[in-house]
Structures are given as structure tokens and as C-alpha cells.
Image 1: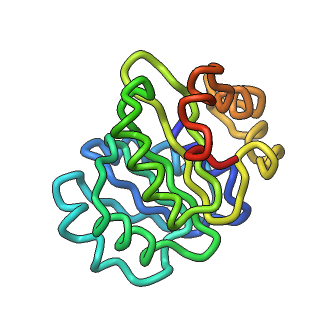
Image 2: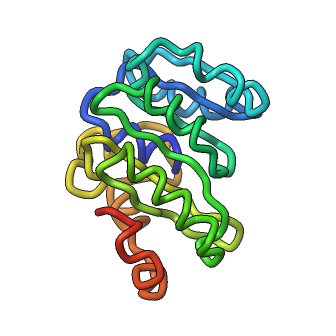
Length: 177
């Protein structure tokens, strides 16, 4: 869901930065898309090395780790991202409001759209976008014509952004859709 939701939302992704200790699996999913340049970092080096990424060079940032509040890191992420970029990551379960609300508030300094998706027992995924809305701007032909996908499709993409009422109420103002 991290890969396909991001790459089927961005209009024309060219450069993807993958942050994961298992980035090869994510890179395999990214290989289903044409003409992507992939960069990879493991979780340990990400905080130390994000500032070395060329400014405004990343279209999609995929962080396969739980995002922690870190204002300096968020500023470096913002600097690396293109003007129409988006980021997907994991957050602690949305039932832990205080931590997540603070992260969402800080991300709001950099992103117009901040939407949780695919909530499960352990964590919630988050899409933060400078331009593209994940349900209004979904690239339908890209999402439905992906080959060798046993799970992801356009209907699931849109449905994954449906959140329980208590989440909408608890994060009113922090979630930007």
C-alpha cells in the first residue's frame, strides 16, 4: 500500500527515495512502474544522510518505518522534496493521539494535504502531499492496469482513506483533506 498509493497519486513520479531496512522488496514493487529512478537508504542512515539529498530532487518519498517527531528531519525532508512531491510513511496507531497530533501539526508546515490511510491494529499509514490529493487525483489507468498485483486496485486505494468517525473527530484540523 505504501508504494502503490503514492505512485498512483503523483501525476508524474520520476525519482523515488525509499527508506527501509527491506528496500529491495519495496524496489521490486516500484519496478512495476515505468521510468522511475530509485534511491535507497536504510533507516539508520536516513536521519544522518537526508541532508545530502539534492534539493527538490525527490518526487515520492516512501518511509517504511514509523515516523517520529523531529523538526530538523522534517525540514531536511521538505528541502529534498520537489514542489509537487508527496511522502508516505507509518505512524503509531492513531489511537495514540498526543504523539501523532504533534507530528501532523509539524508536517502541516510543509504539506497541503495530510491524510491517514490503511489503519490496522499496529499502525496507520500516512500520505502527506504538497499538491496531489490521493482520492481526487488518483491516476486510474495506472492503478487498475498494474500487472501482477494480487492486492492493490483503484477501489482499494480510495477505500483505504476511509477512517472511523472517532479518528476524524480526534484529529479535526490536523488531518488536511
